[in-house]
Image (cartoon, rainbow, N blue to C red; front, top):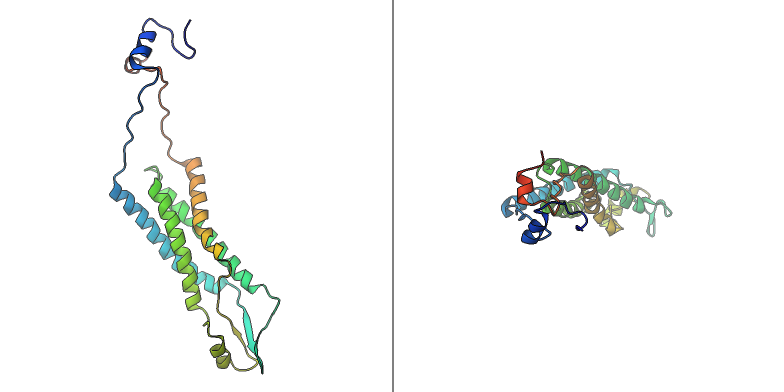
Amino acid sequence: MTVPNTPAGPDAGADSFEGGPYLPEPPRVRRPLLPELLIGGLITAAGALLGLLVGVLWLHLAPRVMLVAGTDAIRYVDPEGEQRAGADTVFALLGLGAGLLTALVAFLLTRRRGGGISVAVGLAAGGLAGSAIAWKLGMRLGPSTNVLADAKRAGQGVDFSAAIELGARGALLVWPITAMVVLLALSAAFGKREDDPPPYWAGPQQEENPPG
C-alpha cells in the first residue's frame, strides 16, 4: 500500500526516506538595499511634486465661502451654504485622482521587476506628503485668514472671499489609501507571476530525467 499522491516505483520509497517527504525551499534572493531606497525615494518625491499641482487645482476648483461686512458685523452671504463641505469634497476627489494616477504609473514602471515593498512605501509616503503640501499650498495661495483686514479692504456691503480651509482632515488620507488599494488590485490582477514550485515528491533524478 502506497501513501496517497506518491508515485509508485521501486525507488520511490527510498527517495522519500533519504530526502524526506518535502524538498527544502530554495533560498530567497534579497534585493540590494540601495536600489530599493532609491525607488521608494523617487516615488515619494514624485508624490510631493504632484501635491503642488493638486494644491493649485484645489484653490481654483473649491467653492468659496463669501462674506460681507455690514455696519456692525461681518456675516456670511449664504449662511446655509455648503461651500465649506464642498471644499472638502473637492480636495478628496483630487486626492482620489492623484492616488489612481500615482499607483498606475508606479505599477507600470516597476511591473517587470515585480514591484516590491519600496513601491508601496513610496506611494504611501508620497501620498501623505502630496496631500499635506496641497493643503498648505492651497491655503497659502488663497485668500488671507485675516478677515478684518479683508473686510476693510473690500469695504462695507461688498462681498469678499473667506480663506479656503480643509474642515475634514481625514481627506488627507484619501490619496495614500487610494494609491495603496489600486496598487494592490493591479498587482493581484496583472502583477508578475512566480512559477509554481515542483511537487514534493519530485527528486533531483526525476527533474534531471523527465519521463519521455
